[in-house]
Length: 470
Ligand code: HEM
Image (tube, rainbow, N blue to C red; front, side, top):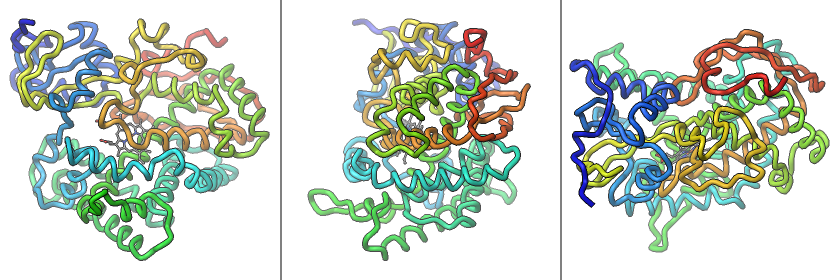
């Protein structure tokens, strides 16, 4: 087939000074507003700036399949931030040698070594801690008048991931390290824009916070080496070895420990926040879900067997991850000249694809903006049509862990409390689907007095919370 010249891929006109950069910021910070517009305006392929090939964006299941299942053509990108950080910095050491960043043979080797720690069988080992940590945080709600929902989800998921990954945690150390991570998340995008290593700059801060985190992980690894009977993920990684007897190197151990930790809690925390938000905007669904939970669990936490027996809970989580996926946009880079939508794309081009846009295609999901968990009772979709955890070689290693954890937290929480949102709360997602504004809620003992509290903000452009429920 004759391919078209890539230069003719359509895209928005931009101011020459900023070029594609301003649109890249939009694509990553507010993908849910910018990418649907790009798709609607230009179709299944577009550049971020007319005539410029630095970033090409593709849409739809066929393109997701091409980009995610053919590593000879499309591979994970190391990211601009890593290119700009000194190779011998703690930040680079933590970010570079892990399963999310490695390609080809190295990636397959790391997956092989790490997979057993995330095997379905292993989830039951983490089960008790997940229940205990959830109950520990929920206990505090008895005496708290009002709180910010996302922060409380952080409290639960952070404790669960630390326990599951490292088998230990110290409450004060935990607060300190979560602050470091949040500061780092803030500093990194700014460091990209201003890569200047002077005291006080975000770049300098990124390097310093990276050192702090590295010390934290190195200490954990050292402590873990001295424990012989541990059953956590880190212990499994330390003892994992290949058929030829080779173990993970020190650098790989550090980098993978860091990446699992960083990948593991923010995504789950945000997902839980949106599930709870969506449920409280749809009182009938919440009521049906509570019927299911109480019918099976009778007020108790679920057993590992019961986790798989709650179809509505399953649908609620799936539907929430469809509508508001924390990973709304993903990136790859072309390893060689490749074809997409009839255009020849040169090697070295950055390719973006979007879970968010795919999940809203009406031909795949009728009434795409509505929260309809029951659709999952009959609906089957391929991994490239429904991909909140990505697809292909780099699909999320913790997907099973995250779903299992969310099911435990939701079933314990909802049987115990009813959440009341403050009327008129402004709701909008920002980068990585984090809520932009505080989601202030009150927890009262579960009394089934479900009622939709009206909210305002751009969430109403993303979810159709109209009168279907009234
Ligand atoms: C709801 C929660 C989660 C969501 C939405 C999520 C989403 C994703 C997505 C979209 C990817 C693919 C990235 C790509 O293809 O470039 C990914 C990869 C990954 N996730 Fe998750 N994730 C979640 C929870 C977790 C948890 C709990 C862990 C570990 C404890 C984890 C560890 C990882 C790792 C290590 C990778 C890289 C895998 C590879 O490159 O082979 N994630 N995740």
